[in-house]
Length: 277
Length: 250
Image 1: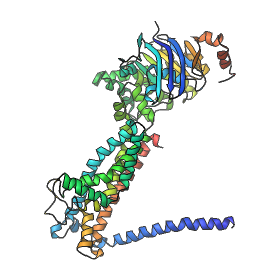
Image 2 (image 1 turned 135 degrees about the vertical axis):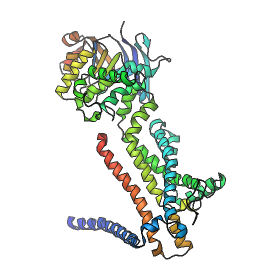
Image 3 (image 1 turned 45 degrees about the horizontal axis):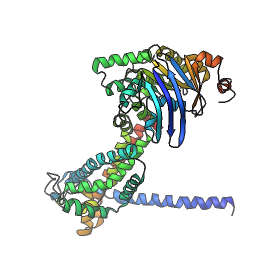
Image 4 (image 1 turned 60 degrees about the vertical axis):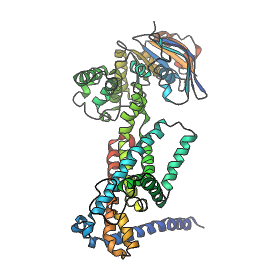
């Protein structure tokens, strides 16, 4: 085989998957864009009781922010412990592996766990709070890994300088390493949100209902969400898929906007943090 | 009495025996240079004085380091207070990603030495001490990274001065700097020795000769020779020192 033939084979072998990805992307884009027609300001601001999707949008955002509120602090503290304090050994390796495995657990299994543990065992029932806790399980690995990466990027010389001035280890970490890693930490939380924004299985049994009277008044009430609504409309109510494209588009835009915010933050801070260049 | 008196100091990193029975008495208000080829243990030696070797896992120390007659390795030593008294300047300038002011104010805040107006005074005084005040007085709120390498290193010196130390350790403070910046730091080191006890690690022989009053020469974890700088350079007792100074190895 001549070099030229080899070159052609590789070109095709590498090019075809790229083209497949692009086609899939444009197909999704095409489907979503067909939702634009059904989308209008009234739909977004009208109550579900009158055929709008207002409570679903707000409910989705409630779920995401609450889950971030749970997974953010726990994930960040866990990452700080793992990077700065955990002795390298068997137990740390096991914890490390467990985090990887948590990231790989199918969301329906997480949903089932959330239902049996948070909803039934802890008695939270079908509620926002149960949804927060269940979704936070899916966010945790992303927040932990992202924060770990961000902390490892901070030059050790900052912490060393603080220690040499006579600070305690925690003070050195909290006053130098964590602020320097903050942009990366925030980015990882936002990426965690983006990861679960479209999540259905995890909230299926734990926090969603098809219709509520207005927004939940406390964390212990059930909530409406876009992803859940899509699922029910198509599977349970047997609506033709085209009728929910508008809802799907809104959900897509919410997910995409979180991801875009994360990218903008990362680019902005990379410019301001010379050690990342 | 010596300001810092090192007695039969041994340091291991895991299985690696880095310092071997080093004894060295360092005089107050003088500049002592520690020189020797790479890997001879000179950095480990000065980091043993403020117990910075401990922050690396797997280090072990035996022997004693007396600071004003008190062994810093005693169990009742407050290591945070020790590191306040024994300041350190690193090989590469390592300012915090904060403003110039905040860099210098960091230590005094941590040790609750001052706040408000008094803190402003300490920052100014420290920056003057680091020979940087005139260059930065109009832009104290700028990021420390906006300074040149030499200015950053002087900022790091000012930051160390702000917690009112007695001893200042410098680990090859000029190795990342150009000759002009190096000259400024060297002049500063001479000035500092009026108020502080300065111990500087260098593998630059000319630098040791220019700035120091006393010179220690180390090789393979052992102290080979120690004396006043003039006699070590002009009249070395050890053949090894002679060879190193004349550039036959190193």
